Every structure is written in C-alpha cells, then in structure tokens.
Image (cartoon, rainbow, N blue to C red):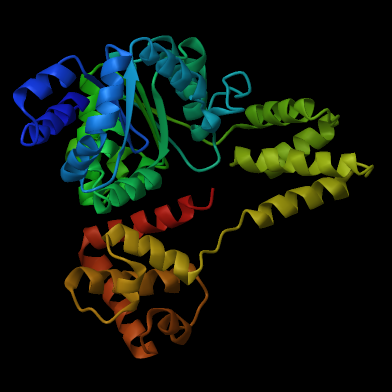
Amino acid sequence: MNSIQDIWDGILELLSSKLTPTSINTWFAQCQPIELRNGALVVHTPNVFKRDIIQQRFSQAIKDALRDLFSSDFDLIVLAGDELADYRDIQQEEKSLPEMDGYTFDNFIVGASNKFAHGAALGVVRNPGSRAYNPLFIYGNSGLGKTHLLRAIGSAIHENDPKCKILFVKGDDFLNEMVHSLKEGRTEEFRQKYRQVNLFLMDDIQFIAGKESTQEEFFHTFESIYSAGNQIVLTSDRPPRDMATLDDRLRTRFEGGLMADIQAPDKELRIAIIRDKAGHMGLELSDEVIVYIADRLTSNIRQIEGVVKKISAFSGMGEEINRERVDQSINDVIQSGIYIPTPDDIIHETARYFQVTSKDIKGQSRQKNIANARHMAAYLIRILTSYPLQTIGSYLNRDHATINASIKKIEKDMKTNQETSNTVRDITSNINSRNR
C-alpha cells in the first residue's frame, strides 16, 4: 500500500466480504479517505446523516479491517460536510514547530567559514524544491552551526508558508522509529508520515550508515519526496564520501545535490559571535576580554556561546568580570565539554551499528554478526576509556584473556581489512556525536 487511497480500497475490499454491494455503494461511494494520522483513520462523507450511519453501523467493521491490514488498532474519525474544512484549520493551528524555536537566520552570525552554507540555506528558503539546492547536504564538525541552519530553514519556510508540511528528525530517531513501526505493524503509518511532506529535514544522517534495512527505507523515503519536487535538507559530521558504510545509491543522491561544508570559525567570526551573544544578554564586555576569549576558543561555536553565558551568570551575581572570572568560565565550559563514553555507551552504539542488542553482545551467542560486534565493543572500550581488561570483561561477561584476544583480533583485522578500520571510525564518530 502506497497511499491513503490504497488503504481505503483495501478496507472496502474487506468490507465487501461482509456487506452487500448495495450497502457499500450507498454508504461509502462518496466517502473520501483523508489521512491516517496519530493512530486514527480520518474519512469524510458529504452529510451528517451518512456520517451518523457509518459511525453507528460500520465503525467497528472498519476498525477490524484496519487491524487486518496493519495488525494494530486504529481509531476512526468520520467528518461530514464542512467539518473537513474545520478539521484542517484545527490541524494547521495545532501544528507547531518546537524544534525550530529560537533558530533563525537573524541570529546566525555569518563569516568566511560558513558563508557558503548560509547562502545555500537561504537559497532553499527562497526556492524550496529547486534542483539547484535539492538535496542540500551540510556537513562539518560538531558545534559549528549545522543544526542551527537546518532549523532556521524550517522556521523561515514555515513563516513564509504556514501550510507547508515540514518534518524535522534526527538520524537516530528515524532509525528507532522505523524499528518500532516494524515491531508494531505500523509501517504504512510510518511511511505516510515521512513521505508526504513538503520539506524534510534530517539532522545527523550519519547515524543511518551501515544499517541496511534503515538505509533501504530511507532510500525510498528520499525518492518519494524528491520525485514529488519537495525539498530535502540533511546534515552530517562528515561528507558522504567519508561514510564507508553508506549505501552507494544514497551516496550518489546526496552528492548529486548541493554539498556545503562549515569550517571552524576564523578569529573575526569568533569576535563577532561573542559581541552578538553578549549584546543579546545585555552584557558589556571590553574589547580586551572579547579578543582574549576568541584567542582561547578557536574551534567550537557552542563552547564560545557557553562561555558568554557563564560570564553573564557571574555578572548577574554582581561579580567583577576580570581575567580570573573569564579563565574560570572558559575552563568550566571546556571541562564540561569533555566527553568520555561509558562502556555501556560504547556497547549500545556498537550494538546499534551491527543491528543487534546490547544483551546480544553481553550474551553467549556465537553467531558471526554478534561475535563480531562483541569483538568490536571490547576493542572500542579499550581505546576510548582507561579501563583495564578485567573491568572490560565484567561489562561483556568475559574473562580478561578473552577480551585480550578480541582486542588483538580487531587490531590485526585493521591492518589487513579496510572495512574493519572504517567500522571503527564510523562507530567512534557516532559515539562522539551522541554528546551534543
């Protein structure tokens, strides 16, 4: 089933085994399916009389048909006459974009390092769906403003056209939602949600690389949106060519759009950002302090913003903003930004990459895929933490000799197999990307 009409046709086919052709024609000939949304099928019929009959006589039969089709329970909403217009007005009023709150082009500071990406994002807003900007793929290290631009696009297009169907999702959320839809028998609802949009925004798409079934589903989602002339914008911590486990079909389509990278901010941009953030907080900073901060923090805009907020907090408490307070603010932000993943974090992300569970990795199964995930988890815990072999073994339910053998196996494979090296890199990047 590829559309709401296909679903409705399937329901009518099931109903025809229980009802006479006359009943089907009398009550459903002018009944129009509207959408399958939030666990409910919405249909429209011309008048209140038919609506009441459908609700009273056929509601349960339609719900039973939905269960037969999807192996899951759905509600039924029947609208009559002008109720459809009211329903759509309410849906539009209720539609909000909390993910976009506070993210605009006005509060995005432009410099040499992000000028091209900023211009491309504005191009999408001016002409969404244009082949020149579709898909737009923005990439760069964490904390440089990719997500801000992605959300600013959504915010600006929503302001220009409130009726535009916009969907924002993170790569790992797309993966998780797809898995849940399969388990619950709601794949068609999942597809309806993602494929019938005018603007599709995905943050951190690198999380779907290496997940075969997820990439397959995303490929068809991409094709459906793109072929309909609708806009796609994606962000990643790396370009498609550096995602070794990305499906070649997806890589080709991403690279066939507009690629825009964001680099670390230069000193001029860092100074401008500090002035802007301080001004919005009503904080007066001397040129000396501003330049000092810009010289200390050179690669991450998020850290710069954090330092200004910290200094503002000191100022609000009546503290003098001197070099000591600035250094304390910088050190606090830098230290709070150091991310050392726990063994459970590493096991979880490794399991996700290999499409198994953490329980599988810690268990006794010798299936090849699970065993490979277990070896990889042992290796990554060793290189990403300071834990000794015995402690690593306690997390994986193995003795230290087995852990040592797993580590040596990965080390050996990395020397002879580029795919193993790519897997280590991709999982490590995914682990670090979770701390945002």
